[in-house]
Image 1 (spheres, rainbow, N blue to C red):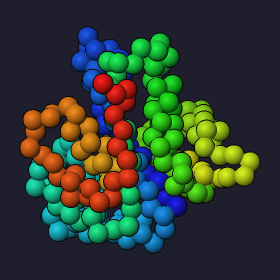
Image 2 (cartoon, one colour; image 1 turned 45 degrees about the horizontal axis):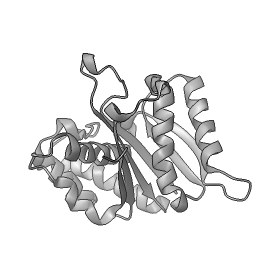
Image 3 (cartoon, rainbow, N blue to C red; image 1 turned 180 degrees about the vertical axis):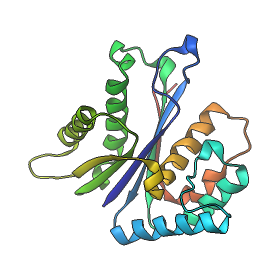
Image 4 (cartoon, rainbow, N blue to C red; image 1 turned 120 degrees about the vertical axis):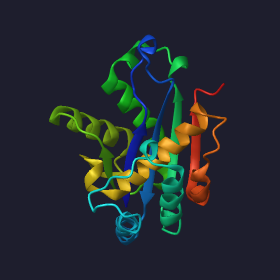
Amino acid sequence: MYVFIDESWDSWFKFDKNSSKFFTIGLVIFNEEEDYLACENRIQLLKKELGYKDDFEFHFAHNSFKIRESFFSAVAPYNFFYYSIVLNKEKLYWEGFKNKQSFYKYTTSLVFENAKDKLENARIIIDGSGDKAFRQSLAKYLRNKMNTESIKRIHSVKMIDSKKINCIQLADYVASATNRKYTKKDDKDRSIQIISHRKIYEQYWPSD
């Protein structure tokens, strides 16, 4: 099992300095390696079909509506499913959230809690960079949250540049498109509906 994670918008709480109101995490799960590799190759082929170089990176926020539709249409037939969680940061009052690493670990654990019944010996791949201590801390945190003596939900946790793995870019699309539903409710871009049959659960927290 392979799990890819990415986030949308920032994790800061400095609203007077234009911090985002919402923070969203997308989690994409492939039960089988062959399904992950097939989707990985399809995204790579899409780059050529659209006239981009092999090292082109899909970013939902930077791509046009036409490209977003092409991307979601390309991946829709493949065997994956996804979860997302949207946090309204203006309603989070615990002081600990002001620590970026604590906030990221907490929100990651929330989306994993929603998905834990589906997880089995999963290889977790998260977009982003960070120092060695943070990667080790995050991996330990998730294992302690998800693994028990009888159930091993998480096999490993790695943080890899999204340029190197196309399916992290899929997680970016899931997170960013979900986030857009809440930040731009009057927007006509609902391209994520193309993969609505892949959605398991979408959470808005804390609820109004």
